[in-house]
Amino acid sequence: MNDPEFNPEEDERSPVETTEWWVACPANMIVWARLQVRESGVSEVLDCDGQVLVYDCEDTARAALMDAEFRALDGLDDDDAEGWGLTLDDLNPPEGEYDEDLVPQMMRALEVPNR
Image (cartoon, rainbow, N blue to C red; front, side):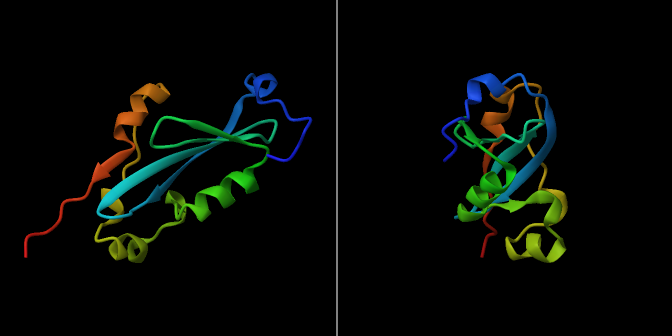
């Protein structure tokens, strides 16, 4: 983040406006990331290790996700999923009330078909 006046500790009380799930499929794995945009514009990404990465704006967070080869779940179609050897029905983001509930679900090995 480049904004010297930005203080994420003061922003924690800003309500979450939107939540999006992002997915990547490296090396026979499904890896999830959750992007939350707060009312203030500050964005947070929960990564598969349980870290919350804070960005000064949504565009910066999205760029970081794309640089890490994640794709927005709501932007995927059948052809995208098929390219990973999946169907859209196979792509169900983690569920839970707290981040601690989500983290164990953020990475999953894909079944490799027998040949």
